[in-house]
Length: 259
Image (cartoon, rainbow, N blue to C red):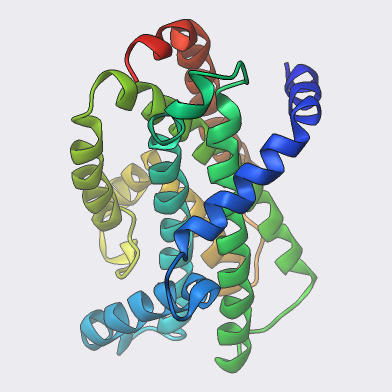
């Protein structure tokens, strides 16, 4: 399946590249700062959250800004990638209703654009960590693992949401509420250490929390998570992308009738 996907992307490489360029340019069209907003937006969010929650949680926690940045970094990438993926089909209906191209190309282009923004913000994150005297080492290479899992996970969620959005326009409004709820359930600005052990384990049912926790363990604790934690991160990503692929394959032929 992966080989077939790669062949189709290569055969439509020009279209895919143009879609990525268009998505990236459209996001910053008619803005004064342009691409700088890729970095400024999460930084401003970080500033607001740090001012609001730093007084409550930051006093007793070392490197609280980096702790907060880890959560905000992962969550922002997830939200941008999945929200863009949800709108991928509807915003490109004028293309695939006239030209026979793989519809998932539009979703993948949105994910690549979000990944570029994530990469730029990640560079700023490392600068903040360096300024906050976080110890750098070879163990930082382990961050590639949760990033890869997150990419796959976001694609899977995007596949599910884009299909749902074609049939149910209410999906967009419901997803806004869901992401807000998810933000509070992902321990972005607070620590789960104060919760009972049972409650702490319940947080692991949230895939996004797992990816955020992986970042924090590597960056703040200087350790590599256990093998079981690696398997859990991979399991969430693979299960979600399989579900998304199944839904896409089943309802692909019906999209034209609803856009």
